[in-house]
Image (cartoon, rainbow, N blue to C red):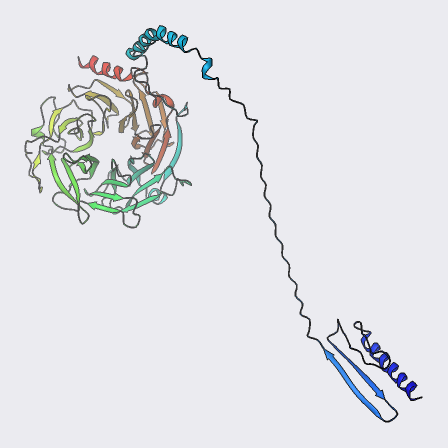
Length: 536
């Protein structure tokens, strides 16, 4: 009876344990007469009371077990790796190489001996032929028409009503710079102006945002890049000063300046040019001319100063009397210089254009002292050697031929271009290109018989003397309102480019057609004939 009672209590206790665990997991309770382990795989806590009762007395025990909380975390990852590869090859073509043994060496030698004399005779004929004289291979694409590549401008300068007064290409031919100022009457000495440059080879070129801008306290009237330093440019001011800038230093571009001293020009600077030093051809000086009659040579020294090294003065009574000259309009002894061009064949020889309208042949080697009272830190010499017949008004531009040592062009306020020989006073020919002023004239650097002129009627005229000696081959309309074109320059490196600046403050870069960039056969000889026929 006692045993059956114990079994009944155990069964009830076991049943109670199973009932407690039934909500959460699998339990293994004790069998009849023995306790068993309690396992819980899902719930955090399980508690099972077990009761044992016996006849002799009652014993109560409570047992429990606890497992650590299960930590869970969700994590996700996604990776994608995709590679496409394509290879296409053509089936190799077997190269057939004939074995050397298949050539008949004795017969080949006999053939070469037979044709040797004939081949040498034909080669000698070709060597003596003039059929391809003057011909140069040009691999550039043929350009049939003259077209405008870029229209460049600086809005702050244009808003002030400034004109493009000077233009220059750098030594690489990739950068074009312009001077902003005024050429009309008025006191522009204190007018703030600019020198701007655009790199045409730079990606993302913005025509209205120059790659370099220099603010200048006086109007800039002329500009010239250094012959070998691509970022150095010289400018002449309305105030009479000459400055040199380094456009690669935007924060502090000024390299040298003349300052306002007794040596400085007392009139606006008409033109500047770079000249190699006589004893150091790799070093250059800056030459400046002005309507005060002085021609000055400057060298950059320390402390940002341009120092005067040589000087010349044009005095009326010292001019050679090779032609009849009018009295100087100002009644002064000095002759104002308005333009300069150096010979490509003699580095000491140069042509000056004057306010009186007559060109002068001059030399840097002249030794005669100038009869002038103008103050100067160096002795001033008289450079003029020969006087040519005058235009009907002041000369604005002169240009020496790069292909003939005696030929040069001049253009002036009478609207005419004169072609001169240095061997005689009268012009070889005179062309009326405009009813207004002509402000610029330049020989082509690659075509001996081609030149360009800029007019006060807003056009650029391209002449090919091989086609016509009376009318332009192409007339380019630079400005729609016929405002003047003040300056132009061919690009000697990229010879298909011509830049021109106008009174609207705009620089236009024109791409020339192939006929203006490829030299024709015997063109240089035709230029010689032109000079010789008229000179006799």
